[in-house]
Every structure is written in structure tokens, then in C-alpha cells.
Amino acid sequence: MYTQTFILKSFSGILVRSILTVSLRNLPDSLSIIFPYLYVPLFCTGRGMRIIRAPSVGTAHELVVKMVLEKGRVLETEDDEATIEFDELAVRIEHPLAEPMVSPHSRFSRNFMEKYAADLLNGTPAVFEYDYHDRLFNWGAPLEAGGQALHINQVAYIVSKLAASPVSRRGVAITWNPYVDEQLDDCPCLQLVQCIIRDGKLAMKVVFRSNDMLSAAGANMFALVRLQKSVADQLGLPCGPYTHISLIPHVYYKRDIADIEPFCGRGGYIQPVDAVCRACGKCRR
Image 1 (cartoon, rainbow, N blue to C red):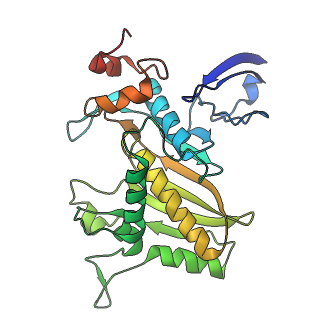
Image 2 (image 1 turned 45 degrees about the vertical axis):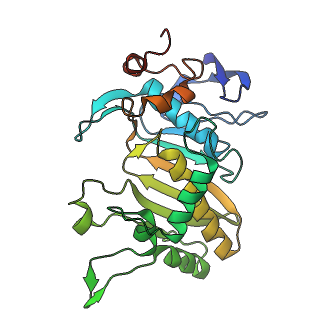
Image 3 (image 1 turned 135 degrees about the vertical axis):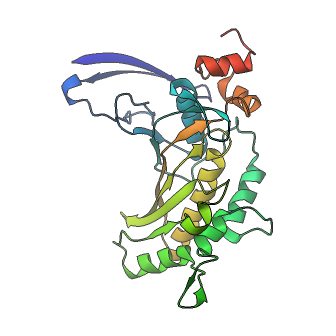
């Protein structure tokens, strides 16, 4: 048997101490624990996907930033960007509409998040190489089928599929368009959205091929939870869990160094890997 004392401190200042006793022979590759008196995330070690359980989107954002900055590895990307990159991870939020939905350490305000979510749901006149609204609500351009341009509303399909068959596992939308995206410098990070109905609630699971956990993940989660609520409302259901899977989570630690300090608290909240501290240089670490 193995006994370890875990001391977990949230950014809001809550200090939790608990004794965990487990058998090493039965220890799974990924582990998350809910203590009876408080919902506490436990960072997982060992092989396999890391799993974080968080009580809210805002807290989840803080925890994924912490994990990448403390556990990640330095990598220079094909675009010559300096990053800290980590293994694949999943975040599960049981009550995705719970507050805080925005971390107080994020550089983006609540108003910005609401506007970003509205653009995903309703579209925007701004022109980008791609945007998630078009990929989810108007997938296909410039492809054709049967001599007709493709304009597929995948969100409407999800709603109709689940309305017709509440147990279906086919309520899926994708963003990738090989004809377009293989040629783009900036291609979609979000790849797949799945909605299912379980226990009378609408759950959502999303997959990102790559995810900027510092500057993008908070807004991504916020907006996609708003999409989850929209689908749930159309089906007359409450929201269930939201699961956010990132295959390559990372942080641009030189480009966004000014945005790291509020999360890090000069070493008070996060103890980043050495490369991040050298780039920052604002504390004694």
C-alpha cells in the first residue's frame, strides 16, 4: 500500500489536505478522485491520457495552464514559435454552467467571452481563414455534391438526430475539410463535437488536435458550453457534463509571457519549468 499526503491550493486561496491510500498494483494509468467534502482535481501521473475533473470552466482553465507549465516540455513549432507542450489530456466538467466560467487570471473579460460565444453561435461579418461557426453550421464550401454547393448545418443535424433517437451516438459534427485545410497556414484546432443524451441530460464531448491552453482554451470552453446549452435548450433538456479533449495542449511561453504571470503569481500559484522562468525573469525562481 502507498500513502501520500496531497496539498492542493486553488487560485481562490482554498487549501485542502487529504490522505490518499491506494494499492500500487491496482493504480490505473490515469486517476482522478472526488473527495467527499470538496470537488478536488488530482493531476495524474503515469502513462496514458491525463484527466482533470473541475467544478467550472474558469477553474478548468487555471488547472490546464498549471499542468502544461509545470509538466510540459520545450518545443519549437514549424512556425518557429517557442512553446511548452504536454501530453494529451481531458478535462471533464460536471456542471459546465457553474461559475466562475471565466478565470480572473485570464486576459479576456467576460464581455469578450460572451462576444466570442455569440460569434460561434450566430456568425460574424469578420473575415478569417476559417471560423468555427461556418465549420459547424455551414460546413462544405467550396465542395459540391450532385452539382450543388455543400452547405451542411451539422448542429441542426445533431438536434434532429437526438430528437429522433435520444440514445444515439451519432450526434457528431466535424470541422476539418481536407480540400481547404491542407492548404491553410491557420487551420482549425477544434476537430470534433459530439452530443449525447444520458441520464436525461445533454452531454458534450469535443476534441482539439492542438490547443493553446493559455490564450485560447478558456474562450474555447466558454463558447462550446454555450453551444452545448443551445442544443440542450432546443431539445428541452438540462446540460450534462462537458468533456474537453486536447491531443496536443501547449502554451506559447515567449509570445504570451505577459499573460502567464497572472496565472503563475510569480511562483505563488504555479512553479513553471525552467525555460518559462528564464523567459519571464520577474521572480527569484
